[in-house]
Length: 488
Image 1: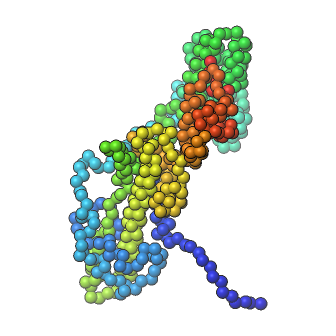
Image 2: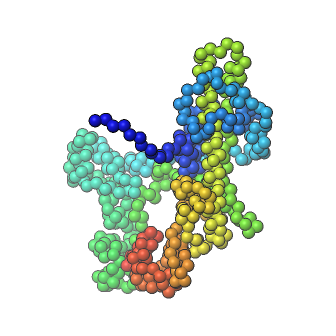
Image 3: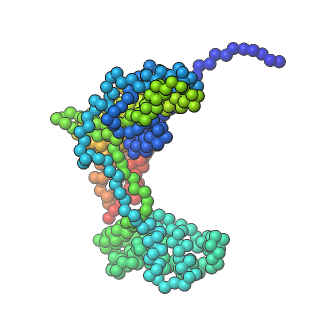
């Protein structure tokens, strides 16, 4: 049985332009530049830089369709388009009022990167110094190809034998592969091709000139590795009948070794990440001054060729159907260009007002650089100050950096939860972590402080924190437990 009924429903939908703006806001400077290049390629009506003559007046678009109502699929009759709105030059465009006093030295230049030999290619090149049969070379190259970026061979010999048979048609046995692996172990950097940390350290020690400390270090890593990693120094002293000074020298030799030999390769072909600060904060006459990276404020305008197309259509007496279709296409591209320019302007404003609020909220820190001056701050605090949604503030803070007098900082690091001290005052968890870090740095390394004693010390300093909270903060600071911090 069919029934008819009315149902009222309230829903909220974001326009494509609003979605575009949110995506632009969360982009850091380098990603934003890439997005800008893509838009310039996709929309021929949009051009970068400045022109001597510009017929486009951006404010004229506001008299036509609303920004948020456009969905990119409107069927507009060409006869309804007011061409004069796109060709009006009654006022001086904004770009003509901008200064153009840049010198040649201000030109943006991309930093060239030198072509480098990859880590694995360097290892293969080193194999040329060894006398090997064709079969041995094939096995050696397969072993090198199985080494990860840290320099380890994390596969069993049996797996490698099977893999070579199935994928390369190379039929061999474990004994032959083990023999070739010893050749790989002779390659530089020393320690490469090791199957675990113990073997990696042993390979490096055996490449060193033998001394009393080196010989002892080899014995300890080979026979007492578990006691060494757990820092059972008393057991080692008793086992070898040596003095603390002798053990200290031996441990110093081991600490100089590289646990990740692949990472030490100067020509490693990993992608180098360059951090481009999105903001800069400077102290001028005792006051904070905030600037937005100029690369976030590009100069854009509409193509003059598109203006000429509209003028030609306006002056034409015979308006064919194909011309009308062309005008609809041009109008759509002009609107798209205008919306993109407006989105960039809104992005600039949103970034600046949000970072400005963060700067003033953490003014004390930015003036003295002391992390203990950092106030507890959450996304809602800034959202309330600037009148934006929490999600918008999160997009600004995420993956963006600010250049300060104390170094380049990730913006989201300025946000932290609040905890109360013994005076009942709200203090930042960042402040507590910094104090905890200082206490651990100043401890007697021969007798490191366990978490319960650290909790007592912070309580004496006015921060009543539970032992489990100390453990959590210590892990977040990447500080090991007391036993692993012990030194002799």
